[in-house]
Image (cartoon, rainbow, N blue to C red):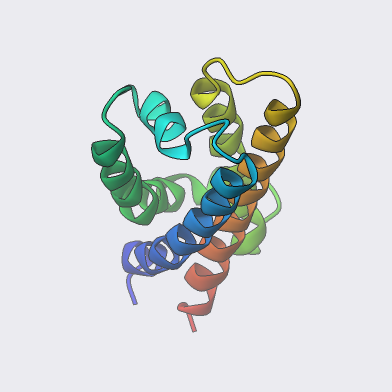
Length: 136
């Protein structure tokens, strides 16, 4: 199977995992933050949460996996693709936390940072694991 198709397969599964973690974050925040709003800020389209969720799904299922294939050989912790994808997604997670934060402050900020980073690390692990598994 072609590397790009394997990565998109991992991205699709990873998107469900990422979405689950972000849904848990939204629930745990008890209305103090809107994950859809955070995603909209991350994508630079504040005020359009439905569009943001749709674009985020495409980005995490297709865009990030294709970028991962392009940079995989330059990432540390090889040759394990799951470990490399965790590094890749960790970088994305740090940017997501920084850009999407908006005015989040106080104790909810700790929950936001923790869940967001954990969600992205889990996404990376699943992306890389499926990608590697589909290699045979």
